Length: 236
Length: 88
Image 1 (cartoon, rainbow over the protein chains, first blue to last red):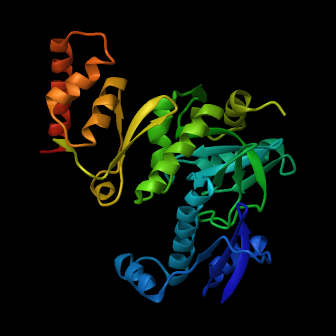
Image 2: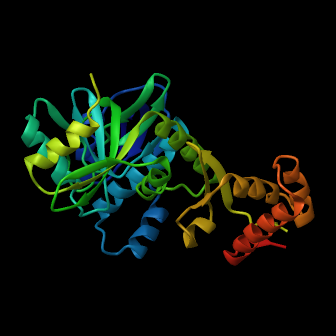
Image 3: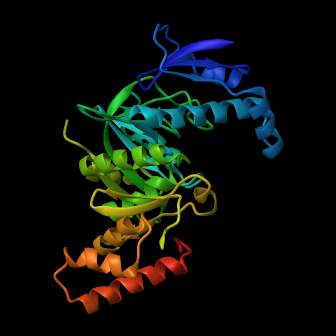
């Protein structure tokens, strides 16, 4: 059945069959008149994916591929996805990015423990949307948050992007644009279409001129949170 | 000679970045970083051209001898050929 949702400021009509995605979109349900985009996985497409990736359940296929469809379309609306766990503190969103399994969710979870759940919130635990707007660069929660349902239908100004790795000691350093570009491009959906690639690169250009990017080595401790937050925090 | 189809060059926050698109992005998912001279040569190579034409064009912009520039351009093009990015 078709649902109407509003995600990252876009009015989306989405056709869903399975409960997993239906549950994830609940916070985003909103009626609208003018539709920005429609997400539907055709039966044929669904079968092709199923044949190729036979380890995925039907509801996982729907969840993953509606997400990919949304994030590809987002490129046409001045936005893109960053594979990261996003935490909002004092109105700014900080995106901790790394390959799966490194510990980005573990680190943002420590933020909640350190600051308390009323001061720190997970905006999206795996795939937040970044949007370039006239008044600044914003992070939006979306229904597609990876293995967890940690996402919020809110937006916050992007505070910083942090690439995280495991380390015995806690350390953090700002990195150059030259270092940041390949790291960011590895953690987003790279479109095949030429115009969309150019749009992505132009958004990246604006982002890097306005937002700092860091590398963080961290262990699992409250001290790790202090090390990262003291360096990345933006004055409110 | 010219650059093969399937690559875009963009200046991203002061860095010249080449990224593949379409079918090319399936066998190569990385990116190439160029310096300014490389980016200028790349731009000229987006249309079918010759070593001579490239060098003459760049001589208008760079205050170096023709010999030095020709060598630089040759070296860059041989790197592009080595990476299989040039078609004749």
